[in-house]
Image (cartoon, rainbow, N blue to C red):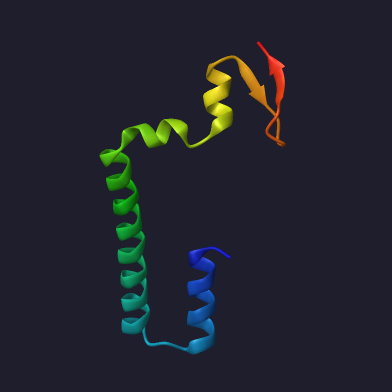
Length: 76
């Protein structure tokens, strides 16, 4: 379920007043913003991490194709 679907389900089943619905949405958005901010901070502190997050991309740059099991499937 997406965040929106979860919220809609809660709203429909709980019969919450509008001010509580607004509060829940604001708090949920704050949490999403904090998580995104933390991710961006981590990347800015060590930008090399974003280059090595996927071995397939790294090896593709070197001319190797990596299969789902982690072995080389093709050399270009």
